Length: 225
Ligand SMILES: Nc1ncnc2c1ncn2[C@@H]1O[C@H](COP(=O)(O)OP(=O)(O)OP(=O)(O)O)[C@@H](O)[C@H]1O
Image 1: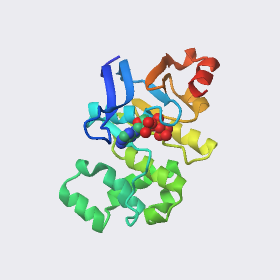
Image 2: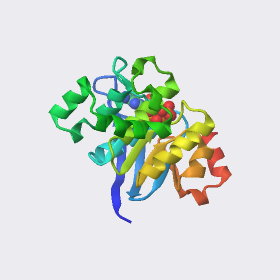
Image 3: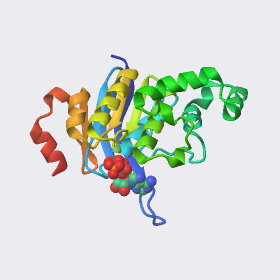
């Protein structure tokens, strides 16, 4: 399988608040390879470094990824349609973008409605994003990521605001629509059920990196204790 990205002896740091102090180490990765076709779950307690790693992978894979950040980051005054449309401004000319902001074309309305339907937000396309619930906003952010039409999905807790059944159904759709996915999740059973590889982060390191079929309940317990 094609290697998409390889990190080796990689230290992910943040600048220290104090002048003159060394950068603060968030995560150290000895070796990590991502291949096309993989469905990878990033697991670990809050603060373990999942978002930090996702952001680094996004940088490495610039231009190839649909990006779904932890915070939906919608423009509250704009309609849901426009928030989704804004996910792929680079796919259209400036004229098409401007026209759709003022008067959305039928073609783009249809395309976005099709995308929104399975996420259960098709009837919200003309509501203001700021007036939606947290779970609805999260689904708009997912639609915005899907609208980017990239082969690789990087998503940070994309279904955390949804109930278990809805979250699992939507995660399945996300995985189906991308050739390769790397998704940070807090729900370990969901990760084990739907992904084929688990990268587990703890104490600023990769605790284990295993095919899902080889992850033992003890591994998961050690990860969260
Ligand atoms: N912009 C930043 N500046 C400084 N430190 C940061 C920054 N972002 C994250 N960190 C620190 O890096 C560590 C890893 O954070 P990160 O957000 O990657 O964890 P996470 O596993 O995604 O957590 P969560 O599950 O709560 O989202 C944490 O200790 C956090 O405080």
